Length: 168
Image 1 (cartoon, helix red, strand yellow):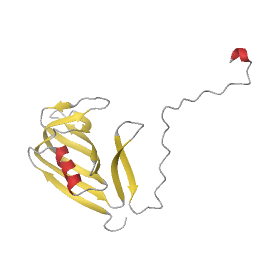
Image 2: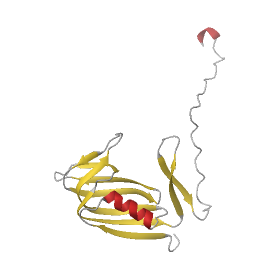
Image 3: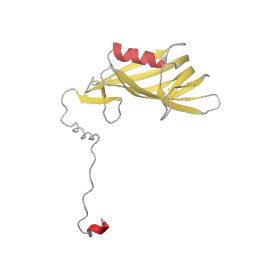
Image 4: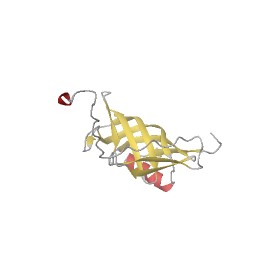
C-alpha cells in the first residue's frame, strides 16, 4: 500500500455519549471517504440493536461490554454491527442503532482508505441504501462490478420437444 493511503483515527468516547451518533458525526466532519473500524473496546450503560430479520429495535437496559464493532463509514451514512456481552457473558449482536450509551469509555480506532470512495446508494434488489465502492485513481487492478440482477423478469420454461405433446 502506498505511504499515506490509509489514515488512522483513534477516538475515545466518554460516559453518556451515544456511540452511533458520535461515529456518524466523525464520518461527516472529517469527512471519511472510505472508513472502516479497526478495533473497539469499552462499555455501555445500555445498547439498542436491530436484531437479524427484525423491523424494530431491541433495547438492552444493563451494563454491557463492547466485544466487537465492525462496518463501514462514509459522509452519507454508516453501516455498523455491534456485539456486546452482559454480566453473565451472554452475547447480543446486531445493527448499531442510536441509544448505545457509553458507560465508562469506548476506545475506537477507525481507518480511512485514500484509494477508494464509499457512498450509500439505493439498491433496487434490496430496497436499502447499500455500499457503493469506487476506486479514486481508476485502479486498473480493481475488478469490474458484477452484473446487477434484473428485476421482475419471469422466464417461460422452454418446451420439451423430445416428449410427446400429451406428456408435456
